[in-house]
Length: 422
Image 1 (cartoon, one colour):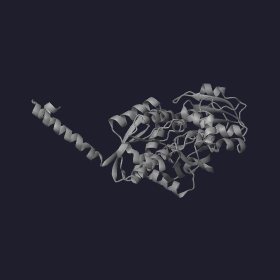
Image 2 (image 1 turned 135 degrees about the vertical axis):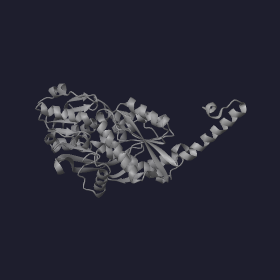
Image 3 (image 1 turned 45 degrees about the vertical axis):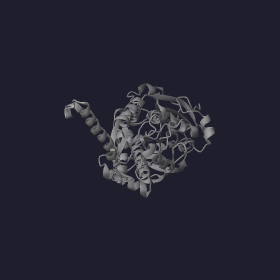
Image 4 (image 1 turned 90 degrees about the horizontal axis):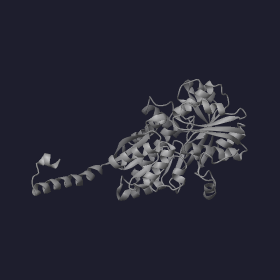
């Protein structure tokens, strides 16, 4: 390229060209110093596409509120796409970090992606990783990365209050679980069972399916009659397919829902199953009918910014929004200084406490969120919509559900077989 532009034929010419190129390389950081490049990674492919689209809406809303400026510098957003598998998330992250040269990466969306991203973050200590919405507990509880921050609560935390309510208030004593076969649903099932089993409930069987499963007939056929309810932890198209097929098969057992199973990414879909879902208890980081001025403003801002979005922001939009707000707050704190391996910025994030649309959010020693959790039931809302109505707010739930950390760790990681209470 040097020869074709400058016709270099001599050592003197080569030296001149090298000097000019060196000058260009020196000038580039000065130009980059006026802006901060942020990678936004979400599932824009596969069964969780709708989830990823709404996640990025949340991030974009946070940046829009800041006028795409933080710490006195303009923010450039570069999007990356995955399909909820760890390999796809790391490919996208590698492109964002190593080719696009982002300073900060916000994402990923799904559970196993988060565990993989934690390990990837350890190989790039000078880049700051802020979780999108991935909620497998082990992402931060075990072997955390010092440059990975999660301002959303995890799948175990999201279940706070649900197991106890299902057993004691709804009267469900014997259930089966149907969930996707990866880290986040393992965390959800564990969080539910910790309370449910303690309250005297029994889990007769667990059914695990891969993400993107389209035919649930074999599992539906195995659901026993002698149960009170089905705990379902499926998301996106998987949840819609299971609910439709279960209803079409004549199934009539009530449902207990994982956090994303009755999220707006599912409730916003059309179909006969709508009436079946009314009365379904769930728990998670948001509640559609939360009667708080900050939440109402968040919903109004979301609808104004995205008139073609969901009837109410999903928990994915909420999680990515928190990540974006935290990033902006941290950058403002350090006046946009990302020098010295972003150490000042990372220290600011670790100490950050935010007043959010869903209450106070702070981080523990593992850089994991401590926040309020909402126990909810599905109700019919305005204009024939379905909404999650607040039953109870469980304040400031930590990652070990109030247990001593050493005792909680003795329970072992959530998995297909852990815990059990037959």
